[in-house]
Amino acid sequence: MEELTLAADLHVHTVASGHAYSTIAEIARDAARKGLSAVAITDHGPAMPGGTHRYYFGNMRVLPRRLEGVEIYRGAELNILNEAGEVDLPPEYLALLDLAWAGLHLFCFDGSGTESYTRAVLNALKNPYVDGVVHPGNPDFPLDAEAVVNQAAKYGKMIEINNSSFHVRLGSLEPCRRFAALLKTQGSPVAVNSDAHFAGDVGRCEGAREVLCQAGLSAEQVVNSSMDKVQIMLQARRERLKLI
Ligand SMILES: [Zn+2]
Ligand SMILES: [Zn+2]
Image (cartoon, rainbow, N blue to C red; front, side, top):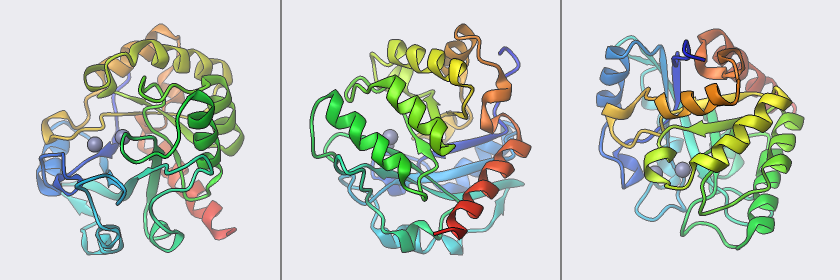
């Protein structure tokens, strides 16, 4: 796993999130400096206090496809709102995006307990617009890891090992190790993302790399370790959405 470096960072926040501190231009500059080929701008969905309005996502077409030589994907980090797995952008907005993550966040989820959190994530993964689940190791929302990994594998969705978790969501290490071990067994798609809320953190993956390494997971299983795999994933999304 020592060789794991990110070709694309698929989970990055801008000032639009309300609690992040860099612009898209600053993020692109940092990504270019670090040799990344692509970044996905994935600000929090509208249910996050202080965050975006849905129009923010509706207008992403004004963004250049490439900045500083770095491909810019139009994305979102959706809030899972309830046990039914509903998310905070409607399909007509989700259809405009290149990719969308879903995750559980404080102040945004109506429910409590592992069973409730797990049901919510399992249902969100069924949503054809959702490409994967972010920071499933978050100790604020303990999940039935086996059920989540199996559901992601069934629907061909990514499970994220989130590099920020190791310093902002304390207590994430053990749950992430459990996810990594299950992912290794299942052989299903993994994403390693910075979840940067400041440009300087874009592309960082050292904590996640260590967890995957300890689990014996190869870089081959990490979707965003090569642009070829990223393109295949984005194409699979487009094909999936054609069927709706
Ligand atoms: Zn955030
Ligand atoms: Zn998040």
